[in-house]
Length: 501
Image 1 (cartoon, rainbow, N blue to C red):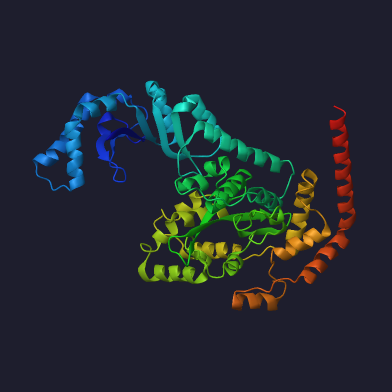
Image 2 (cartoon, rainbow, N blue to C red; image 1 turned 180 degrees about the horizontal axis):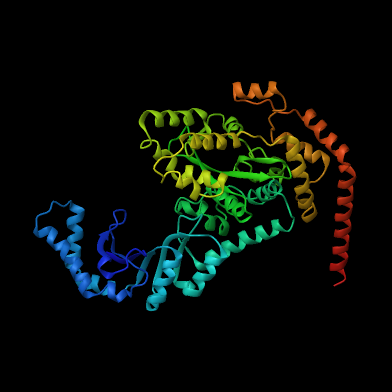
């Protein structure tokens, strides 16, 4: 067996007597024997783990056999391993080759300040840390970057500090680039969406780990990327732009083993008078092989309401992660409370994704969580919040609003890369038509959508009239011509500048 030291740090353990020491084996990998230590970050390692403490711990496993405690075959095998390898266990506990460590960044920092001699070991930080430069730089100050692996948000697997730095650079470069344009939130979303979906969907090879195409870092540093990789990158960029978002997993109705990842985003944009929850699927709108840049000519899965995205799914997915987009589930929860009291009521509301939804919409968890630690709480206030969240997921982005924001973004994209981003009236018409905007501009159309869960799509002639009217009202045809002329003159200038070198 491979022996691994596993240290969990907690400020609660303020004396050596409270320290816990145990031996365990990994049921998923029986070739690993763990020395589990639960202690304070302020203790010296040798005071907690030494020959005497290890021997005292090993005695318990011998007593189990002596007392005739019923053990399964795996436990008997493990106990035999311990009795046969006492010297090796003591040696590797006192002078470990590899350390797994759990705890907050602050506790990890304290522990290695007190136990600096352990810093040269192979170290695996298990507690997920925030994906930001401040954390990276603090880790770099504490450790030799070559001997440390850490988990960061957006990743299932651990990564090296070099991988942390490279993936962070990619995200920060995108964020800094977007910030140059002084966009509104909706405009930021359009430009970020175009950047993230500019990848081919490539699944990892059969001999590779699934995380290669799903983890944030691996998806950024390798060619492989699937839905979860797209969603992780998209959400991470938005969070750094101060747009609240979460990865939203939906379940296939055809294959119980299949899931799909999207992003759910809270948009609060005063410029366009938009405030709501919207689904984004950069995977379904991503670049396709042998199709050039045509993927940029549609936004079918951009900024859709809950009912709209379900309409496009055609019954292929269910949204079990957050069940309260459906009014029936909200009122069933309320009825359950009135019938059975708060005990069966609480678990549903304390689930991670329900808490995360409140954090996104209301800006924090403290107020929400405090409602459940009082002697009594207001059921009506909780139901009102759930209904408000549902209402926020029912506010479609009008086609005219999207057109205005798209125009702003496409103008900048065209100027940066005119060969890739087409910018003219016909292109805008094609984009809106390909994006299949649902007509919700009248009571009749809204009623049709509500009854049949299927919207009436704008025809190309209708979209053409909308675009041409906006162009005429805002004199955009002249502005488009001026932008194209300016870009052409810029290209001529750059070409002559290169030739003169």
